[in-house]
Length: 211
Image 1 (tube, rainbow, N blue to C red):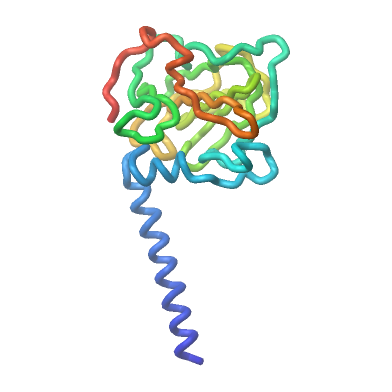
Image 2: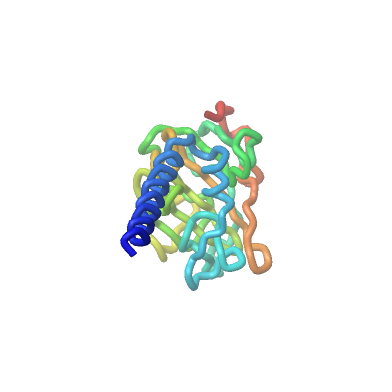
């Protein structure tokens, strides 16, 4: 009996040590690359009772959809989340960042971030690898703003186009100050990530290396 208990204790101890090692190693890998990126963007995660992509959502646990349409401004996303010509770094599905679901704007911490569409704030809190995350929904679209250093809006708040939603930060799975900006579109019973560059003029951004 003592041998069995000892064996179980060894197995449990090994499992704990292995789990800690994996987590520490995972957080050392650069943002958006290889296995961390796939875990972050491609692994279905349950979101409770809220509607999401076929019952799950690829990272962003608890976000879901509310089927909200702004009564005065149902416009699609437009422009960049900045009021100046921002630097455009890592791109949607960049060959070096497989399955990258948005674009990255490398700007200094504290730079104001503005809503690219009116709508309902369906999420405004910390969310795992996304760090501090704001998600705005309107007429079948969601805009995602990740790694924020601060929030200027709160969940369930109805906001206008161009309203300040927060500031650029460096948290979650991030290796430097930047805004990860994503656009998601509802599609049937699920949703798909869109290329954000289809919603703004590339000439209004500065080309910047992805690092």
